[in-house]
Length: 279
Image (cartoon, rainbow, N blue to C red; front, side, top):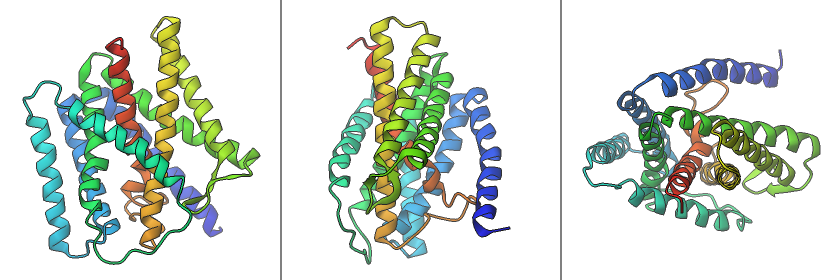
């Protein structure tokens, strides 16, 4: 068996295990238990983030995990009404602004030592989606289903982008950051996300205007998920890393699996809140 075939088999087996667990957790667990599981995933991601930030000391890496845990606990206990908006809005703006920067990258300089800017950036990247998913899950009886829609949306966009890019893709999207991504692939992923939005609107029996808005939110969510993937690719290439970790056989590290979700979740949740507010 070739190395490529073996790697594909590992990816498939890991996905077959993780996907049902993720769906069951979202649909069956009460929000506090889901929040705890997501917090553990955030901590695993934070450990990998310290490597991307150039933090090599075990003491410093554990200190960063302690800081991350303290922030999660503080936000869980926060009594301020609508406090989540104070985090989601700047997080979404940060990801949209980052898109402008990433598409202008032409060369990547190797990083050495600690990058201080990535210390607060990691808090934003990892805590933002935790807040978004936990709040969306707890918001209403439809919350768990909306979280599942978010996950399906990302899976569909990634899959359509992969097959469209492989079949018709020629022009690279960001060759320095991710040579495998093509413009046609991304366009296909965005179309797939738009169709998911229309199906969601149809399933919720929304009027035409809200249905089109739902499709637009899903399309924007898919676009920003690409930014999350490209951003992690940039950070890994700066450190000469192929994967963020080796925890998941065939998939690399935790960040390699949630990079799209870190950017997509805040956008999707804020879009749903905006639509529900009737703005």
